[in-house]
Length: 277
Ligand code: OGA
Ligand code: MN
Image 1 (cartoon, rainbow, N blue to C red):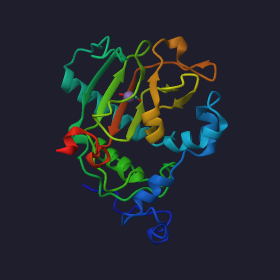
Image 2 (image 1 turned 180 degrees about the vertical axis):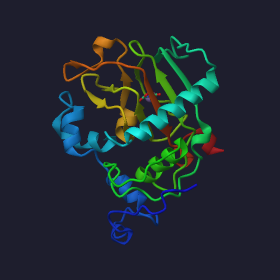
Image 3 (image 1 turned 180 degrees about the horizontal axis):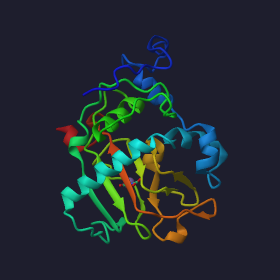
């Protein structure tokens, strides 16, 4: 059931289409290309003190944070849905794994949620302003939520891999710095932050002196793309006392993320053997 058919653009698509980078009919590529984290949000949720000022704009373009993307009701609905999925996939027992197969994640439970999202983009209309949930229609199922994310932020022509649910235990649940597998998904790694705020640390792969932290509040949506997705490792400090934002410890309750990644575009990897033959 589609409940979002009445949503429209704040800026009319005809005015968007005068831009040269608008190659799709609905303006979604234009919106995606020009999106940046607003400076008011950067000043309260980003610690860029170890990044040269000349690179701040690029980081805020390639790491988008929307603090109140979910209403409290939508948040609770997503927590319920994710908890049910984990229970169905893993059984009733709440047993956290101690290490990922490659040792990246500690004290976690995870599963995939293929039926929450089709590989194709949603046909729903984007919210007028995805940074504010004032005039959004409430999304009442996880699938409506994933569709809303796709249409609010991403080009309508994109395809997607199955969403992934990750639950981190209160206290020691965390993620060591890593770059998501290059072979498994494309240029965007997006997530909904549920249950507890999290501090994400991003460290430049070639220059570890260059790092930044983002405070991801409960009910936020975020994504990393392009230069941040490929040049920075990301993680969530494991030790509760290291889970700090601007010198203040942020308490680690049980936290669930719903991760959404776009599919790898084979045409962008002409040097890959599978594309050569
Ligand atoms: C991951 C990851 C971040 C998050 O699952 O690879 O980095 O917000 N997750 O949970
Ligand atoms: Mn990751």
